Structure formats: structure tokens, C-alpha cells
Amino acid sequence: MIGRPTESHVNTYPKSTRSQPKRHPKRRGASEPTQRQLRVGEELRHALAGILNRASLDDSALADISFTVTEVRPSPDLKMATAFIVPLGGSDNAVDSVAALNRAAGYFRGQLAREVALRHCPRIVFAADHSFDNAGQIQTILERPHVRQDLGSAERDDDGP
Image (cartoon, rainbow, N blue to C red; front, side, top):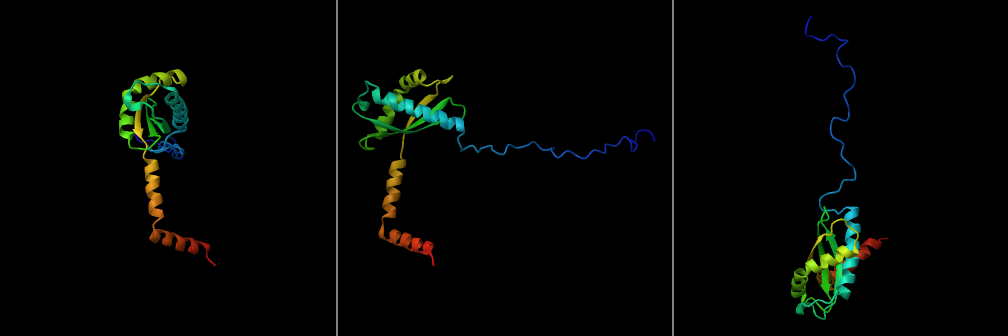
């Protein structure tokens, strides 16, 4: 029989269990930062806090305002970073301060390039950090009498017999 393989020609090896591409078990989702992003973000935060502390900017919106840099989130390719800031003395002037910092972002990028040892210094975008405001709102909700009562009964239920 020409054209038909004999039994000696038939592949008798078992099928490979790796027919599908192997997925890396530690692969992160798009929203989780990598260890490198966290490390670079923390380094940028420390350097940016020092630069803001000693910088003398000519912008009137930044005169006599101190800032707290709460977090710096670099992009996955480390070409861009968002710096979350809180102006000390209240968030009344946060919008003006963030706009003024974004106008001076080129200056801050140059200063960061001198202080942080990266191949490419990321482009900095400043944003107001509202996490402290959100924490204050949650605290006021938790202090309401009916919520406190519910929390108290939940704690008693957790203690149990």
C-alpha cells in the first residue's frame, strides 16, 4: 500500500503536554506595579521631595508653599511619572499649586536627572493627592452615631461566647 504509513512509521510518542504556551505564574495584571516601578517611584519621590524643599521658584503661585510628595507612580516603561502632592496648609490652593508645578515640570525633570541614576529621566506630571480628604470623609462617616452603633454590635458579635 503505497501512500499509507505502516505501523512502524506512525508516531507512537505521547502528545506533548506543552502544546499551549506556558504562562508565567507571577505575571501581574495591568493595574499592579512591578517591583522595579515601586523601587523607581520611591527613589523619585525622595529626590523630588528634596528638590521641592530647596527649590526657589520664581512662580508666585509657589511662593512660600511647602509640599508633601505622597507618592510617585512611574509608567510601566518608566518614561512618565505622576507625582501626587499635598500642599501644606490646606488644599484650598491645591489646584493653583498643581498647575504651577506642571508649568515648572521641565525644571524638576532636569533636577531629577542630576540626582537619580536612571538611563532616561521620566517626564513628571503633578497631580493633587486626595487620599487624605477621602480618609477624612470616611472618618466622619464612621463617627456617626448609627454607624458607631452598627460597628459596636459587629464587634460584640465577633467576640462571641
